[in-house]
Length: 124
Image (tube, rainbow, N blue to C red; front, side):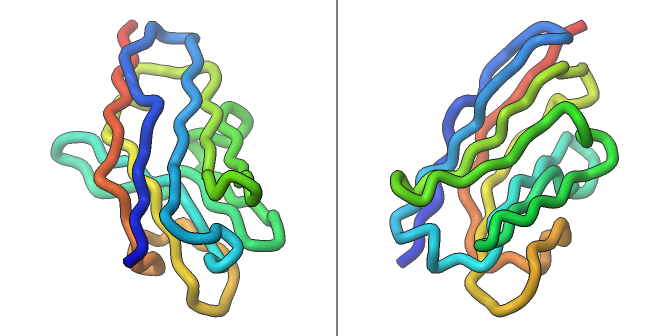
């Protein structure tokens, strides 16, 4: 059974940084795509960043240039480096993964496996 466990969330002031991590129970090389999503209260789940097994990355428009997604194949871990955080980045952040053939995606329905989330709160 695939398990994804996020960590690294917390409270920071605007302009600060956080590094989110997602530990997987299986070899990350088995996933064709991994991604980070976020959901704020009363809002739809939003694709933040995704990375394919070949290292191709996708970013949401609101985080482009501020966030960086990466995967550590030796440690079976996905990371999201978040810099220049803004109050509108406040949300629960979720790690997702999928093994189906295809390119990486920022669409939530693409992903089969999900973590339980880690909260990020940015104060002004």
